Image 1 (cartoon, rainbow, N blue to C red):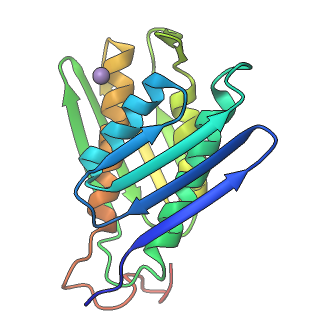
Image 2 (tube, rainbow, N blue to C red; image 1 turned 60 degrees about the horizontal axis):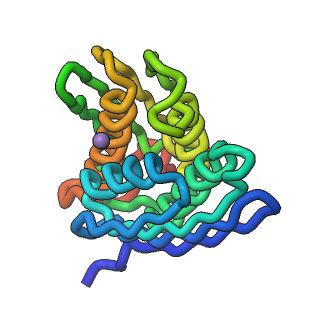
Length: 197
Ligand SMILES: [Mn+2]
């Protein structure tokens, strides 16, 4: 019986209070409540298309704006991935996907590298989708990659609608994380010539 690849992480600051439960080997069952409706929609897309079971409870100073809530949720989700991956033995490690959404096409590539860094080229035609500041999407990816300790590229290949672009990006990153985290029966031990990730 393989070890359960799950994590529960709570992080409380003066700005946010966040608890995330994650099962890497889930079936896409998501229960998301961040107080930021568009962000809930995005995290649902991430979890569903990543096939992760994901529970997110976040309360933050949204009376200021959604910045702290979105960025700190990225931090905690990243920490949950790092914890659930453990020593990373047997994982595929690399993945890349491109997700279309009508006129939009966004690609994501990931390396579960042990080094947290994101590179986003995600031009957004509008500053807001509903009440959501679109610039927060990349803030989330930067925070997530840093704390998950993965190398992440997110690149918009085509796009005209901000909702489509951001949603395709979350789907792409979710799906990419699924394939990179997946256990590959042909991978013996940690998939690195250095012996650790
Ligand atoms: Mn949508």
